[in-house]
Image (cartoon, rainbow, N blue to C red; front, side, top):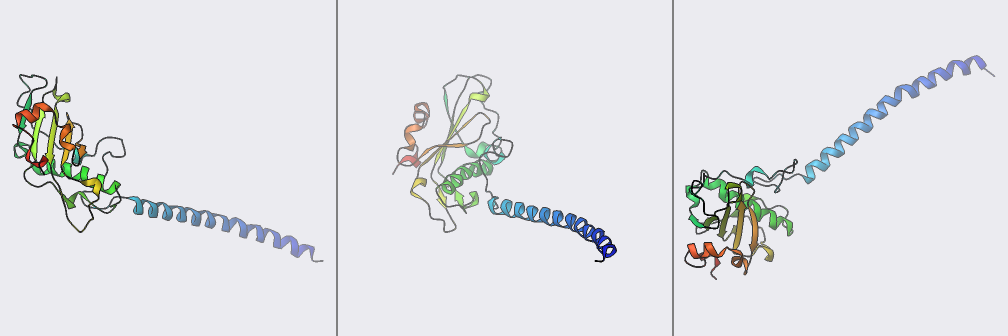
Length: 204
């Protein structure tokens, strides 16, 4: 038996194990990173104008909270009073319409059309825009009523029926109150009176 040879071989074998261990750890780390990247890529929203209603911090997505002009009634409030408004009088009318499109795209995605983006949803001319005064700016209610158009070959589910009624409270996000045949029953009576009856998008 070659005892000396066995003793001399043993440290070499142990050295080989010690050298291979960092390589295995590094390989496992790289595999974990690649898996994480793959999961992130497949679950991320990559469409233009796409996204959810809240961001990672739980705050509303900025696309849903476009700036509004200072309310003309701010200096002489009468809570409950209704006002007819114009989208074009707002600081960024395009951003306001895009916010409404975001809410609809999100709803259609939830119904199964996972690839739709806000850029494919249009709120055409003819929408109605108004407000109900609150006790302060944080309680002002903004309302929008309109129809939508969906481009890009996306099948519009039955759940996305016209008309749409949206609301925003203070500086909060725009949200869909209701859509479909009975949506206009949610519009405050004061606004209906201000508009001299149901707005056009509610008809037919």
